[in-house]
Amino acid sequence: MGIDLVFKIAGIGIIVAVLNQVLTKAGREDMATLTTLAGLVIVLYMVVDIIGQLFESVKQIFNLY
Image (cartoon, rainbow, N blue to C red; front, side, top):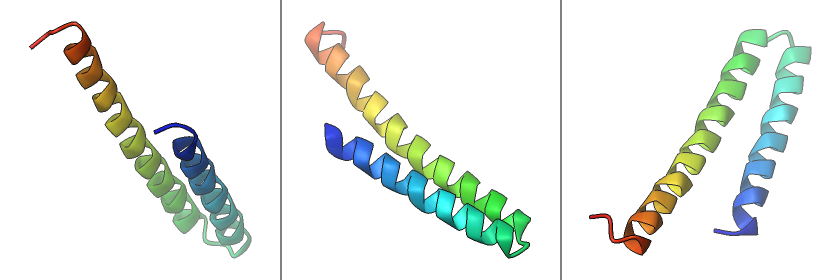
């Protein structure tokens, strides 16, 4: 869960940025927007999963069942 998550998010950000630039230069602004939105959804899904694990850990530490 450590640094690999940061690298995954950074990798997704780089790929989305490159695709956004390529699609914008090709005149496909609508597809560029959808690509950016898809990248955002993927990263948010990853972050929500980590936050869920955090809450489970807090529940276990303080015996909040």
